[in-house]
Length: 234
Image (cartoon, rainbow, N blue to C red; front, side):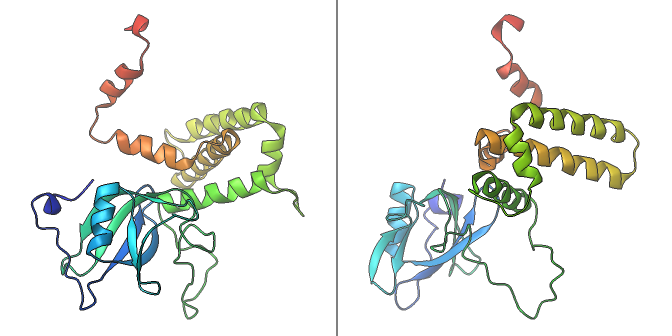
């Protein structure tokens, strides 16, 4: 999807003297900042035409499609310009790790002068995505030096996972009406964790859940439920 400004002919970046403009890429599902690269007019045009993000390599002096060798492409969702028109934001769906080091994001180095409290500087869906990556790593680890609770659930199989989801659902239901806020938060986190373990066991990506929630924006809950109801029950 291209921004309204572009459709009206106003989406023209202010390229520098080299004919380039910086482009920041953001994950459409999680909001995570993934990488920064450069675009020229050709890269922007190819991005629009193909729906996959393209850049201009300053070192090779050549056009390149992100993921053309690794397969970790960026599916374009939306293009935006900043207020000075000298930077582009590409909102995209990544098909795998964005950084060449194998990490989700290229922005992995933190300020050494910042006091570290041991808590990752993540918000919202970023927390969920990071936790999901950890759960997947527990599932896929060939060996483990210490006993992992997640691994024990996965090895026990779906009956154990379902039992834990049911248990945590009951505990949240008991606290939700009038329980202490801290307890409700704690039980909610427990339930979400075990649901995510179930998704990991099924190999269903958390991004698919984000996409489904995003799809429902602007849709009445009654309409949504009616659409999924079996015809013989309508």
